[in-house]
Length: 425
Image (spheres, rainbow, N blue to C red):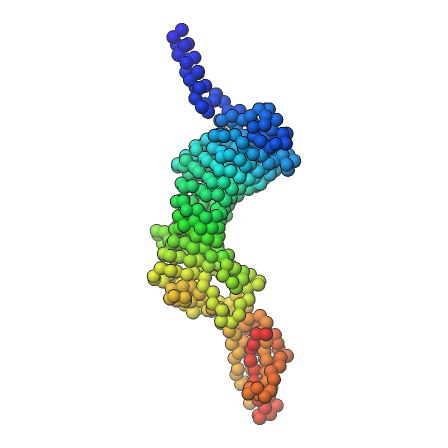
C-alpha cells in the first residue's frame, strides 16, 4: 500500500506541474471559425483550444482566408509547429515559445510568423541532424519571422529559406544549405555560421555586432556565400562575398593563409551610381584569394569615371592584388578600365574608365592607318579638313567604331590633310 500511494503521489505531482503532460496532443488548424482566433475551439481538430505543451499543425489546401490566424492565447508555449502541404499561413498575435530541442518548426510552402518567437529548448552545441528549423523536403520552402527571435542556444536552420525581419536578440545562428536572410537594424551581439555547397547568408541593414563565420563543407569541398547591403562585424572563413551594393565589414580576415586563399570577392556592376554596383568597405584587414568583376549589359560609364570597389578605411594596403597587378587594364562590356590599389585615400581599390585611344601610323606616302584597340560602345569616328574650327566635324563612314577595328585613309595629294577624333555623342 505504501508503494502504491507513493506512485499515485508521483503521478499527481506531475499533473500539477505547469506544462507537464504524459503525451503531447496534436492540434490541426481548420480555420472553421471566422474569427481566426486560436481560442475558438472550432478552429482546431480535434475541436478544442490548444494547451501548453501541444503540437500545432497548419495544413495546406485551406482557402486563403482560413490561413490567417491570431494567437490570442497568453503565456503560450508549444513543442513544435508544422506547416504541411503547400501552405501559405500567416500567424500573428501574442509571443510564442517553442520547447523542442530539434524540429521546432517544419515547413513547406511560404509561411509567415508575425509575432515574437522564442526557442527555449535549442541546444547550445547542436549536432548534425538536430535542426530547430527545416523544410519538410529538400525541395524547400520559405519561412519568414517578422517579430523578434530569441534562443536558448544555437538556432540551427537546415536548407530551405529562413527570413528573419525582426531582431535576433543574441546568441548563435547557423544555416546549413539553402538561404538565411537577416533584414533590418539589429544592435545585439550575434554569431552566425553558414556552411554547405550553395548556402547563402544575405544581410540587409545595420548589424554591426553580427560576426560571420563561413565554413568549408568537407563532403562537397565547397564554401558558402555572403551577400547583401548594410553593416556587419568581422567576416572570417572561406567562401564568396558577392556584392551588388555596399557592404561594410569590420574586417575580412581570419587566421591562416588557406582561409584567405579560398575567399573570393565578386563585384557586380549593374549601374554607375553608388548602390548600383558592388562595393566593400572595411575598417580592418582585407584578406582575399581572388577578385572577379561581373558587368551587366547596362553598365556603360563615361570616360574618366572612377568606381571605388574596395574602400579600406584602416591604414595599410590590401594583402594582395586580387584583380591583377597595379595598373592592369581590364575590358568590361568592351570598355577598358584601369585597376589601382592606391586609389581614394591611398589604399582603396578603384576602377577608372579609360578613354579610347586613336592610333595613327603612316603606311606609305599616300596612306594613313587609323586604329583603335579598345573603345566604349557608341564612340563616333569624326573627321574634318581643319582643326581651327573653320571646318565642321562630320561622321566618318566607319562610325560608330567597332572594338579592335581599324581604317586606312588614302590621301590623293600630299597637300591634303584631314583631322580625326573619337568622340562620344
